[in-house]
Length: 359
Image 1 (cartoon, one colour):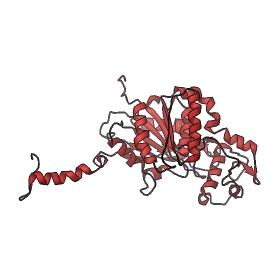
Image 2: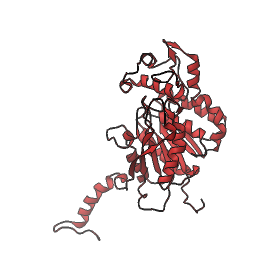
Image 3: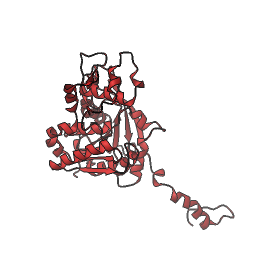
Image 4: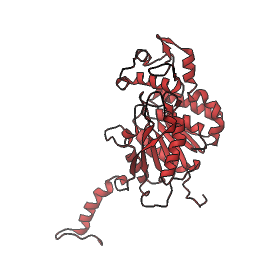
């Protein structure tokens, strides 16, 4: 066999086949080139002065595709990725024992073929209360402006991006899925396509299930919020984002109950930030988008129910979109969905045409 030099006493053809067979059985992505990751800090002027004293300097992880450092004149589409509640870019990009490792998922998506290369950017939205909800609030800062304006401007000025809406996508999981829909339908001039994975919080607070509110009511200034249970932190984060109150220290927010009794005005205020409540205001923006998609696992019952409602609303308004309920829960197939659905979706819908060329 040409090209194979066998040691003495070695059957060249049989030995080569024995060597080649295990290699053929290995997954193709193990042989593919891998992307690289930059860990940077981006200052958010829109986050300055927030009443929670969360830092305005935010860590950001940037995935650069395999060809980025070789093809130095090439520009790339960008996918902005929003993580979920209590998560961070650090966990998604660096933690080997976390439930997902995004760079490995992106490498695998590219190795599978048929997916165009893109830069992927994830800001750290972990806050004092466990997450920003990607909303605009004096208590937590203006995360809408930070993501859609300041972060995009920074990435466009520091990386070789295709700096146009047609080449920018927005996606996220859980709280990040909520942020994807919230920001995506408000900024069609910035992002042309979005894909929401298991988006939470679409229907607003449920007054019949105030999980975490009783404990949240009893908190005092010195209490360690980081050690609270998930439901209590979620109540605080929701209130900080959607019912802030600069005159109500120490947390500068209004909860949906007082002394165990529901507060209709605060419930209504938080509901106003729910996409299923306010989406009618953004139909014209949604129609401007190139592509819209969202999905959830069938075992993720509450979220699956809300995206079925979202599907009906968009269908009634004749807004083109993709929608899927798959066999899974809130996290167990997210890596697969990113590899097999999300990145191919953006590969199809984001314009990768280089400057000076017509598509």
